[in-house]
Image (cartoon, rainbow, N blue to C red; front, side, top):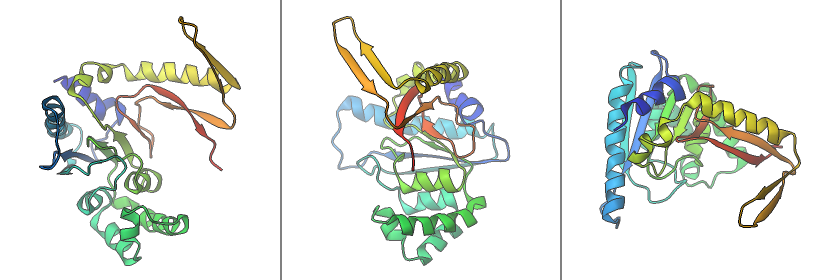
Length: 244
């Protein structure tokens, strides 16, 4: 196992400070899941990586929290209540429950107006939230209210690592993240100045893309800014609709 790559999650990717609170979590294989031997081995390795991260993290900050829960079976499902309490603080979740919107929040049946109300609740309690998260669950929590409220309301830095394979520690995770960021910024600068992109391949394929009202974003692996959210491994330059 490439321990330096794991150390860099604290030292470079998230730039964790000694006084900060960090939450590491992973999901476990359920008894009813049918997996190939190779997939089972990959999934079991996630827990070992997460536990190793927990051990390494103690050298970077005093407050390391660790949580594991049975797999939720698909991406984007809201994690269990206990993880919310670890991440936001018990009092915050109690306040959310007083609004009567807790179940709707977990079921993603909440309206924009209701979500705005909950955001105000979370903001008043944001000091109780963790400063950084390493989400090493097999199934992604990126597109959840859990992640959204943490990053946008609490300023939590969030490293999402779904479908992670231990081989990535020797490959993509061993990247020089400052170089990745520098190259991504250069490409972003180029793409910011064009309206259309044409891609050609040696076999004669030609693809023309029109940027339209889309902004250029980068996912560089450097998640040191307050509220930063991205994937690890990283190195992506992408288009997204302009908000508003």
